[in-house]
Length: 130
Image 1 (cartoon, rainbow, N blue to C red):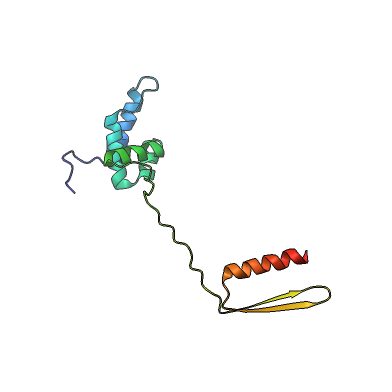
Image 2: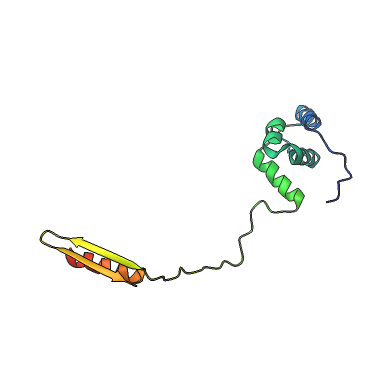
């Protein structure tokens, strides 16, 4: 990655620039691009959270400026293609279903049945008992 030809700014230098601008600004003027650029340079070295705190700027605004300077979007792009793989229908080795009522017990032993068949059987037994 090629190095920038502009001199790098330290956190203390950026902090002094922001303080000087705050003392001389009129009303609620927006932060100039020159100061944002310095803040972005510092944030790349020191981290966005620390830089935002020290320079007293909003973290979200700083992150957006960093993303714009890097030429990337701050929002991740959604995937264009998502493959959905259906689960395999494996047969159960062996399954025992025991149902106990007031007067009797029922035991069903299944071998090689699929999970969907077991679900259907359970639903039918439950509905017929109630």
